[in-house]
Image (cartoon, rainbow, N blue to C red; front, side):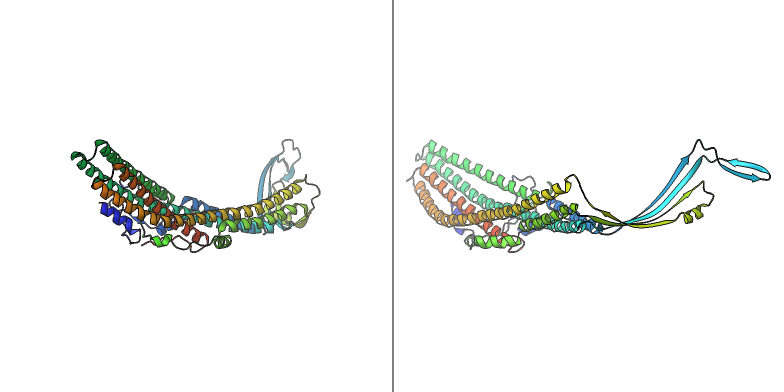
Length: 464
């Protein structure tokens, strides 16, 4: 098994591996034939099913309806009305007198019915361009909603990539921990043999047993971390708890981690042009400019046009219903000019608040650019730092492996003590984990920098 461990270390991740069908013992959704998700499949599925992204799309649809409503506000309004009322006059004495066959009949109607009918139209001809500017603001809001959908999608893709790469790292760490455990078991067995022949004390054997137990605990802990990251990824994809989930382990090489890192300033300049969060703040500035104009419209006169057609009926009339509808028919049209004189400072307050929002929008743009630069700079520094660590780790692993091989040979010959052997093994494991961590962190940050620079819509990790 020690040879297996050495072989795994010397491969350095360069050989292509077959995609395993992982059956994680610590995962509650173990099945015999799980679907394995590639990074691209995870991203595509999340783009369709993530609840946060779906909410953002609904907000976009709502903004589109606001645009339609603002367009409708530019058109005339037309309404029809009909009213039928019942009246009662309890002290009415006079009525209608008729003579029939020499008989005088007097009828007093204390109840009556009134009817009124009309069609009315109104059109705001001009109100200081408030309606047209409102339409422009709503159009900008719709564009901002579209950009917010893109921003949400970008954040989800970024998080998926981070979880996915962490899963790759832990998958490699499990193999290292398994190899370390096998070596510890072999050392423990060798120790028992040496105790039997009197070449090792029982206290030294106890240390070997403790080392084996420690490696078992480490292996369980790493598997638990892997299961946890897979669970986070599964939840991000909005998969239900009873669905099996596992990921494809793509081949990654040392050359990927040693590849060129994009220049910081180049990535930032491209991100400022392409990132939706920056474009959103720019549109917010335009929207705030329009809001100032809308607020100032409160000082300007407004002109509206009205028109209507009305008629009415009354049951007390001697004319029949049809004649009343005809004789009471009336049409009207007019212009209304409204000039504000004093509005209790409401317009002044609205204008000042709109100007404050305008300044906030300018500051938001500066803050968004600063935040974007800090994010990119962080990824760039992490990429360079981990790449340097990875180069160092490659040499360190070879050195520690050779040192541990010599210590193992000496231990088997009884020429070194257990303390030196365990210290050499700890150094080797530390170097191996440092190598894996720096490798995958470098690859992740390289991909994130390319993503922020707008190189392609999704992440790629040489999936096969």
